Length: 189
Image 1 (tube, rainbow, N blue to C red):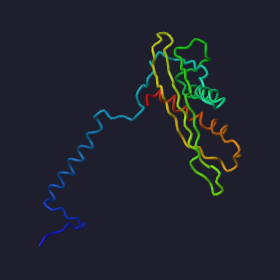
Image 2: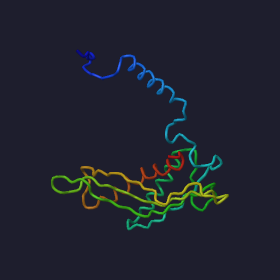
Image 3: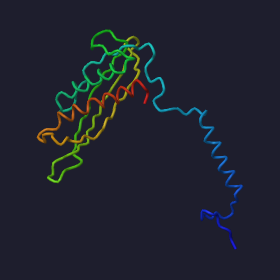
Image 4: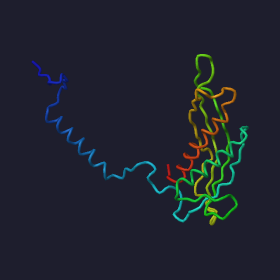
């Protein structure tokens, strides 16, 4: 007659001592991970040298059909840099340690969810931009991404006019896009 474990789990060929050993080894392995170099993503110093204290941000170039997108994105990037505190954004054309230039290559807005009457209530919005951060003293490229992709959903508020949601979408998109870009540059994500 075979004996079964109280939990009802039967493991042929194993003993309580073997299970205890496996549990102990697993526990010790988990404890040892603390000193093996793992760290939180983004906790590094980022891509900027310590001597970069100011960044100029010329108005992004807009290669899309959406008029004014470059203005909203540039303004949001300047606000996000200001909010971070470490780097001082300065007007384009003035003396700065570095310059962040950008070109918005594409912008798309696509409905993804509809209400019972067939009106779009949620959109998928994406922007692809080329961004380059250059040290103005050495002309060395500090950061470059030829296809920086930002994508997020946009839910149409209940009171929103359905005639043209794009102005609201652009306004809602610029802030998280700028936050993502600045985080990528400053925190090394």
